[in-house]
Every structure is written in C-alpha cells, then in structure tokens.
Image 1 (cartoon, rainbow, N blue to C red):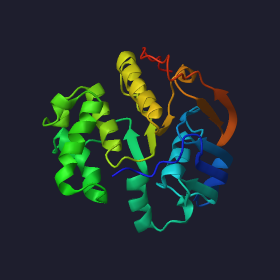
Image 2: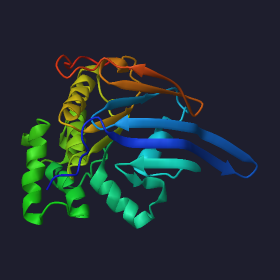
Image 3: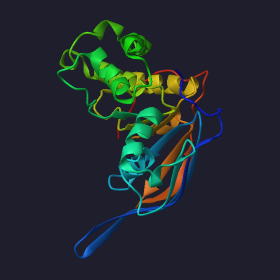
Image 4: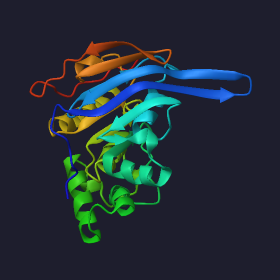
Length: 251
C-alpha cells in the first residue's frame, strides 16, 4: 500500500501566522514569532540558526509534537493544530517519518524489529508483509546484512541508516530530521545526506534541522531563523544529477 503523496511541486506544508510562547510564573518567552512558510512536495529544506533560535520548536509544530500558541499548521491538507491527541498520533504515523540525532533505536529489539515497529502501531501493511518490507528498506539504506543484529553492534552511521529506514516504514510523504548528522563524523554525515537527497529524488519531502556550515550545497532552500522569526532564506545548490556524498563540515 502506498501513501497518498501529492504531486511534486504542490504545497505539502503551509505555516500561517505561527506563534509559540512558553509561560512560567512572571515570565513569557516567545520562541516562534509570526512564522509564514510553505514547503512544496519533493523539496529538500534545511532549518538553520543559532541555539535558541527556535529550530527544533518549529520542527515540533510541523510534526504536531507541540502545539502553536496561535496560527495554523497545515500538512498534507490536514490542520495539524486542530487534531485531538488520538487522531494526531495516527496521522503522524502515516504522514511523517522522524529521524533523531541519537537514533532512538530500541536496544532490546533487532534492527529489523525496530523497522517493523511503526508498521505494528499503524497497521498500514499486513502482518505477513512487514518483515519483508523492513528488509527491503534495510537493503535500500545498504545495511541489509545487519537486519538480525542488535543496534549496539552497529556503528553510528549504520544506526542512523537504520533510523532512516524506520522513518520510511509506513511510506510517509514527509521525512523530518533533527540534527541527523550531529553525532557522526564528516564522511559518514556526507553519506547520510546523500541518502536524504536520494529520498527527495524519489518524491519524498525532507526537512532537516542542522548546524552544518555548508548546508546550501545539498538542499533546495535553507530557512535561517533568528530570535524565533525567519531572518532570511538561502537558495541551495542541490541538483538531482550532480550531488555526490562528500565530507560534511560541522559548525
């Protein structure tokens, strides 16, 4: 079963007048300030900025992990900010694959069992097809031979590849990643970025939060945040035909 991905180039994400405030006794901190942003199906977008600029909070708005104080979050024609918790979890499982900096693989499950887990939660694929699909995804990210090992026996780069395979488990149209190369060496980070670029070529939309200095060499656009607002956008140099893995320079 395939996800209902939109036609390439159509709007997948629309953020309108997005604000987020955190309030404590006697103090209110505005983390996001009037964000207006659209992301097209099939785009590779980076969110960059200094620590505390609102990058991870913005990603949490898109995934529905957190709610805006005001404004709208529309993803794949769904008003995410209006969804109750139960439907929100099911929607997220079908629509978004999340990749974390520290992999977040369950240590007591084998790699292939980790990949099958999102399928078990959502039920998009029949039970008798889940292992077959998980193995195909591990083959796609070039670690099929690690399928029946525990995550602790894999290198950091292999674990991140497994995490990407897990994010693809339910064939979501959107992949989001929070500092996916921050825990990897430069060469391995370049290989992971090449994987993301390949996903974009296959029709996925990819959004990453990153500190990488050379981010514009591998994305379509970089959204630069400062003090919770969009300071500027940088045009990227990603090319479907010319991108190749290279060492990523960390900030």
